[in-house]
Image 1: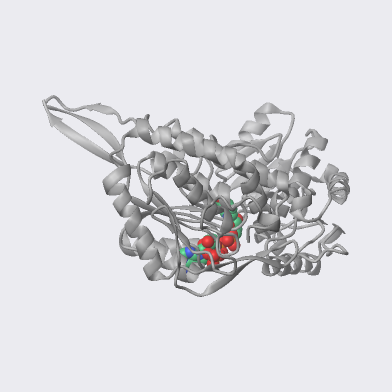
Image 2 (image 1 turned 60 degrees about the vertical axis):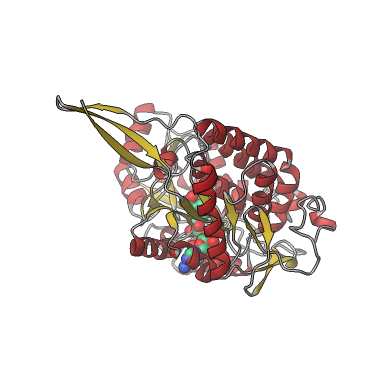
Length: 493
Ligand code: NAP
């Protein structure tokens, strides 16, 4: 396990020790054997087995949650914001010091190009630094009462927060939820995707090495229907942070409803970008091409409905097609523009979506083929033109390197097309007219609007969806509101 591609992980004592033995969970700061079925982890660039983990059973999950609950009551809750901040800054430093090995691990596990994995690891560290800076600034307010009393509010943690994450950016998504949860005084149990559990397991050990008390951050590997379901249903879990598909989000919401616990849902997207005739066309072309580059298009906020004024739609479609033809495709470790898709299932789903677009009358301007000489789940980036909004390729989240170009005649129609979607995660606007840009930003029914460049935003910009794209917000200070509960103390004068 630690030779060859994953060399450098030896120092995570025990985690990858004992070649042939399945990886387990990280519970109470330690590598802990799990009792469930063995599940292989594959490198999607080569289809080779990278590792095997033992699925965390209900009793393994229980051990992790009990450990988190004990760490919450005995250590973390009462440590105080200043000391929590010190520990979280140390975690950020540890991620940065180990960035190289974490990025390589992420690349082998997810397939993403190394530079994108490095950027994800840098973002993971930044989440800890950002929220560490706020651990000692969780202020309430004072409220003057009517004459004979006054009141103040406290922002308090929930206790154990469960985080369930998807496979497209495992380490950055883990840290996006874990860092604000811990800053607010909660402890966590993380269930990463069965496809990509490696960086989350390594990160949890690294955090302990950096000074995070044992039990504050636990990771249980396993499948959603078993390990994930056991975690979100656990009676000691007081809040849930979930990132993934709408279908699973609905199940999580049902589980949360059973016990009346809160839930952040970061779900899918089909984010539109409106290109007005006065736009900087090159900037809009770059945005269209970049949407298929990040994680080979497996990105929730990728802008994949390009809604372009009819006068420029043909030229625009041709330029996006030409731009994606220059992109390189190959194993992530060689740092091309696009790596493989994450799994055989995802590749099949994306190919079926392209076929459905053609069957409904869209034109495949380029791409959509499996490149020669590569063994993994590779697909050349595709551009579909002449797409209409009622087609399935315009309505369904494809989650792969597929771009769609739609034409509109006037700006009201463009807004109507953009808003006619069950999703509402993000949207883009390209225009040189400042007033139009801000007017459209208000009219678009999405949780984020990006003007004249896409993708943009970072750890500090609140992120989350309207409509079926989710509930609540991650990132920025907004996330801290979701990982704390408000107490009002009323005092007699
Ligand atoms: P998914 O199938 O919904 O899975 C997400 C996570 O939920 C995985 O860890 C999965 O486990 C787990 N899970 C599945 N069933 C469960 C259950 N019954 N109880 C508890 N957990 C369960 O999503 P995905 O295919 O991994 O990810 C792609 C989706 O995520 C896309 O829709 C994408 O847009 C969305 N996404 C959203 C954001 C955002 O911030 N809004 C970011 C990234 C991705 P296993 O997979 O291990 O079985």
